[in-house]
Image 1 (cartoon, one colour):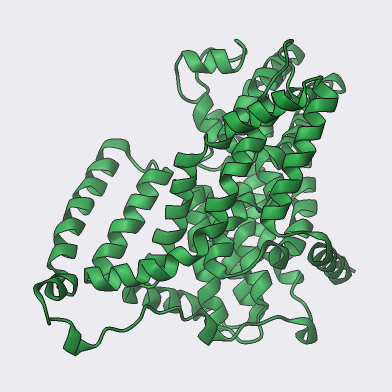
Image 2: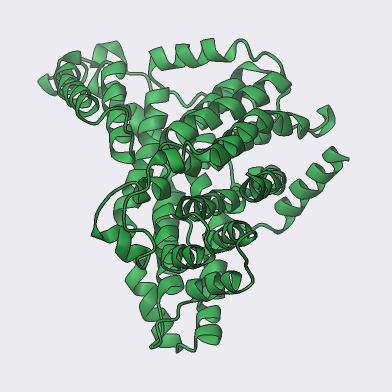
Amino acid sequence: MFKKLTHFCVKLVQRYLPDPFLFCIILTLIVFIGGVTLTGQGPMDMIIHWNKGFWTLLAFSMQMVLVLVTGHTLAHAPVIQKGLQALSRPADTPSKAIMAVAFISAIACWINWGFGLVIGALYARQLAKEVKNVDYRLLIASAYTGFLVWHAGISGSIPLKIATAGPDLAKMTKGAVVDPISTSATIFAPFNMIIVVILILTLPLICRSMHPNKEETVSIDPSLLDEQPKATDPADKYKTPADWLENSPLLSILIGIMGLVYIIFYFAKNGFQLNLNIVNFIFLFAGIILHGTPRRFLDAITVAVKGSAGIILQFPFYAGIMGMMVGSNMDGLSLAGLMSNWFVDISNPTTFPLFTFLSAGLVNFFVPSGGGQWAVQAPIMMPAGAALGVPAAKTAMSIAWGDAWTNMIQPFWALPALGIAGLGARDIMGYCLVVMFYSGIIIALGLVLF
């Protein structure tokens, strides 16, 4: 029965899910029409909101490109290749491979979402080389399922925002939260940790049970994954002073030492506090050091950057969608606010966390960013929760879980993993749809019962 459901979801997605860029364009048109018809704003108003938002994710887009490129480059360093090979040996059957990648990805994403996205995809690629008859699509999908727990982990933007003191906290929550809320009440709260532990332990089993029959398995020729940089003829290495510099480890060592010194300084000062910038910094300078010479590193970068086209093209369009979602009319009503208010209106103290979770999942289709989600929903959901007597920490984590939940069928966050894997969204989203159904039940029960 479960395999039939999986088969149906995979076929459904492969037939009807367009390319992620077209999906993005369709969402843009839906939000445009929704803003005009539901908030009473004119077409030109919505176009202006769209343009205002269009370039707001440029810094974040560059960060995501670097997540993909530096992670991919690091993975091709000889010592990392050997490490991934060693990690892959115990997972010597398709079932073990699927379970291993789902588990490791979830743990890594709970620690840091950027780190987890890259490590999960790289580990899945290596397993595809080592394990025969494993479905490559499901391997990458299993790596992506770990992303479910990121917002409930130690890099979750919403729990970290409400743990940070400052005037912005009260302003963003319309006075519902004035004092910072410790992560002991959000990330490490019993209700949150119960959901996290259940998902981390059961997602590998769910992913394993989705593996298709041998006749329907789509495996990949391991040679297609060997994107090794072009080899340099030893005779050409030292023809000129420029050749000597490019093929000498001296400059790589010197600049690598500078990067290493800062990394040590950062962790000594901040503790084990990961963010996108420090993750990219670590990947970048580790790659420079481990590739040995500037030429080998540059050749690896050239190979890695080929997978970044989707991020570069699509992220500005998603920023434009976010601009239209939060753009308000003369009365301060926005499309995102309208969605959130509807769920508030049908809630009571018992069901409010559930409906907050569902509303966040819906808004996440159009505002696929933790920070953006918080900016949209915090001014509505946090005061409403306070009025109903729901703890602020529970409301905040309900928003966080909703944001993470529908990422399973929102290609936005899958783009880095897909770039590393060399797959399209429709290759993995059928499996992710099944995971979304399952995880939605677990998360909803956890928010209501605990």
